[in-house]
Length: 114
Image (cartoon, rainbow, N blue to C red; front, side):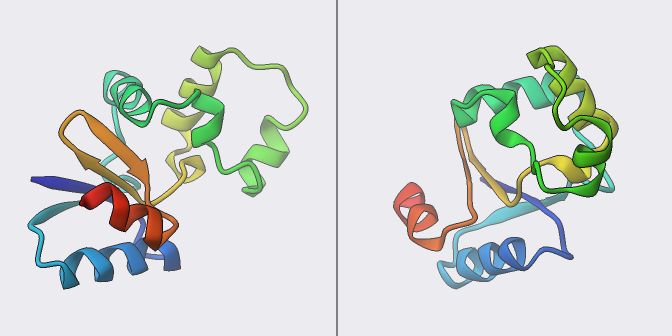
């Protein structure tokens, strides 16, 4: 079953849910702000996304700008920041078994789900 890491306040995340619902594909919604990922879960997610930890960061978020922008951080430090402040994580993220995608663009999401 698909899993969608969702932030209900995010328009892109809501669009992803609507699109997935219209496909009539069963999925589980995970509100990652209320149920944050563990370090191991986050590392596994980054592996499934096939990206570097920094690519998962919303670098325009105020928390990132105030606390981290301009600093040289290791991957472990970036992961620690994402754990401490889950709002920094890109969304929505759609997970299908051993693969995942940041589902901000419906056309890429559609290709991923086919």
